[in-house]
Length: 429
Image (tube, rainbow, N blue to C red; front, side, top):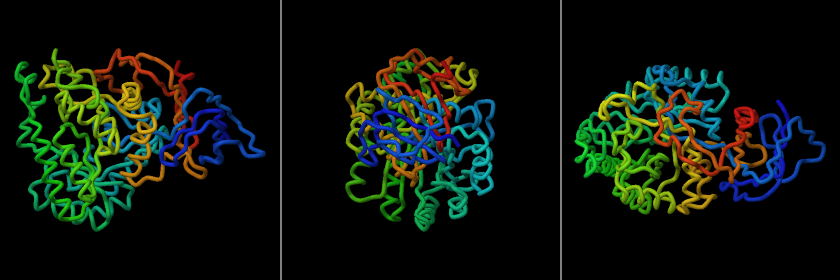
């Protein structure tokens, strides 16, 4: 392993109340010094980080890497290369792969394939029920031992609330968080857009906000009864935020995240039937978006994720309702979050917290810390660099993004995962 000196950068880590200009030294995959290189430290590689920002590697709580099962859309190799270019060093994938991650062997398969790629750390969320059927509970303790950081039924419904309650009780036995994508499937009724004026005008089948809020209310009631640790994923509605905020104030063990695109786009962006704006949950109203922004600022929302779903080109070429939902979003996560800083929605420190220590706390991870002895997961970015986001230049196998042609401020120049350089902007230029 090379000894690396990152010299003269602004070191920023909200988890450790660190904000200073200085050096950071890496040796044997670990951070060995912060502020000033120790005596006798002879670097094999020196990176001049003057006028640059040095932060912990980003943790993405929700990214579908498509492998195993949908390798024509992406692979662990391709999508972790993309994550490295976006400053991401830890990726957490949901259990709805093929096969479903419902046994330790399935989790081990993903772990081994990720280790071979070595571009980012890939962790799994185990299935809450066998085959995500919503009926028979998985052996959650075995999944936890195999490395799964949480359990979830992804976007699949539970059979009934009694099974849901039993699942919470079982997970609570092992203090295992449950990741919940709140959606009442009967109310959603196979819709593809927010139920409102825009969908009505365009003649698109709608998904009402109540499809999310009913599921949130049910989950909160059961969580309060069972004491389960609940993490809501990819929230989209103002009413959901209000209920979660109240539950947090009452001491319910609940956290939440939001996909970065939900903080910038609204239902108006589906006008023109752009299939790249077909996402689940759907883009909702401007009021909903502003409520999500407020929740990010006040701490109700604890993390921002990508909700990465790469697709092959044909998946987005059908009429809007027939397109496959999702955005290739892993490379736009950090730029979209930094844009919130430029728009004065949140501070830079809060933005970094939402991408590093926030998700680390939710998943119970010891990573993404600028602290001596910690794993050297590091992102270096030029905070003043202005650049154009181009779909054709994405490292991901999926180029399905509504942000093609957007201009951003702040660009990743280097990414280190466990002390290894996994991305350099100079090498890709």
